[in-house]
Length: 212
Image 1 (spheres, rainbow, N blue to C red):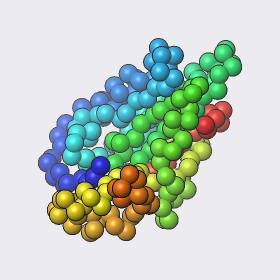
Image 2 (image 1 turned 90 degrees about the horizontal axis):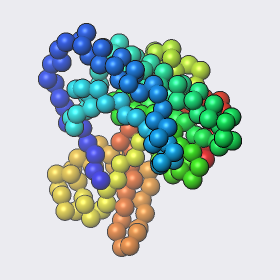
Image 3 (image 1 turned 60 degrees about the vertical axis):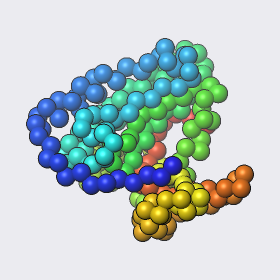
Image 4 (image 1 turned 180 degrees about the vertical axis):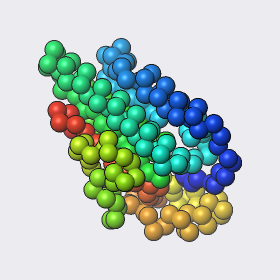
C-alpha cells in the first residue's frame, strides 16, 4: 500500500463550530463500548472530526490540535478507569492505548483490548526512527500529555519493488520522499516487500495497562 498526502489549501471556516465538534466527539466517546469489548475483545475510536479526517489530510491550527489531543486524553483516561474497574471485577487484564500520530493528529485513536486480542496490537508499529522525541512535546500537543507513559514509534507504509516498477509516477515520488525512510525489506513469495515510515508518533499508556 502506497501512502502519500497531497496539499489541500482550501480555507476552513467556522472555527467556533469546529471547536464544538471536538467537544461533541469527546462527549460521544467517553463511555467504553463494553458490548463491543465483550463481543470482539477490543474497542477503538478514531478522531474523526470534519473536515480533518477526509481523504486529503491536513493539520488543524495549533490551538485546535491541542483541544483534539485533550479530547483524546480524556477518552483514554475514561476508558482506562473503566477497564481498571472491570479488571477488579473479573480479574481480566487489559491493554489501553492512546495512539498519538504525526504528521496528522487526525490519524490518532484510542484503542483497548482484552484476552486473546491483546497480542493483536503487539506489532502494529515498528520502532521509531532516529530523531523522534521519546514523548510528545507539550509545546506542540498541550499539557494533557504530560503524565502518560509514552513509547515512540514509526507509522509504517508498505509497497513493493513490483509496485514501483509498474507505476513510474509512484516510483519517482517514493524515491524522492520515502527511500531514505525505509525500515525493512523482505522477500516474501517472490515479491520484494518494502516497509517505510510515512510518519511517527507515540503509544501512550497509563499505569495499570499491561502491554501484551
